[in-house]
Amino acid sequence: MANRATHAVDKLRSLEEGHRALVEVVACGSGAVPALRALLFEREPDGLFQPRCLAVAALAALKAYDVLIEYLSTLRTRADPVEQLGDDAVINAAARALAEHRDEQVFELLLSLAEVRLRPGAIEALGAFRRAEALPYFIAALAEDDSRPAAEAALRNLGAAASQALTTVATFPAAEEHESDSRLRQRRSALRLLGEIGIEPQAWPVLRNVMTDRDPTLRVLACRLCLAAAPQIEKAKAVRQLLGSMDNANWLLFPEIEDCLTTYFGEAREAVETALREAAPDGRPLRKRTRLALQRVQARGEARANAKPHPK
Image (cartoon, rainbow, N blue to C red):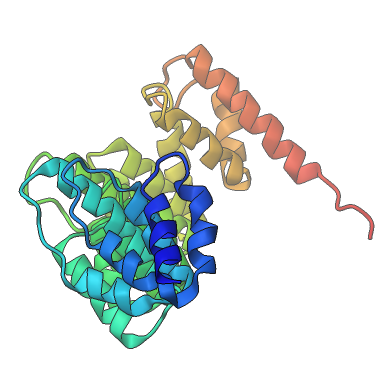
């Protein structure tokens, strides 16, 4: 039986047969665990990670969580970046696999991993616990491109419990004149999440100043929040600001403004009609791109307003 398990695990090393061999390895049962452990702990200077990730999948299927915990508890930083890159893929796979084994030991282990480095696997696994203790790591991970999707998913799952932390990071002023790209992405992500989760009207005054931020994307996202939760008098200001931003908005931001005006057409109707009838808020003629977008906003907004519910 041991020879059969060892032979099956050796097949995981093949880039061609590895995935097919996974079923065979799991069929060997607990007898395959020693060979899987040996494969998992092997060093791979060439950075090849697929066989060890398959070993992680097999260990998880066999519920050999103790081996995965042992592996993540004994990590070493590699001097060779290629080897480290391969190790990171295996670490992410092991962390994600442990998300199915939600006990306190695993949670503390994942927190310790996140303390050292915000790997996406650890952030995703922590998110599965839905515990507020991990909030600081989710917020920090919003600044990391590879970990941001997992952090956003975790914060969505926390919902209103994450609102205060998201508001803090979105409004915290930069110490330097020019914010880093990672910091801007973190703040933009926080505002988008607040838009999805929703804010209470009493939270709006804290976010108001973001409408005058140096970053145009942050200003637009703050206008969206204003239209969702601010007093009516401030919503008119947000609409004017969005209309005034359209002509100079880049190709990424322009659709965001159009969508915002469409979503909140009830608040924007009068200003949109005026802009189409006359000119931009500052008196300049509308650019063709802007005029076409506002015509779409008007058409979609009116269609939504006039739509009748289907009879039940």
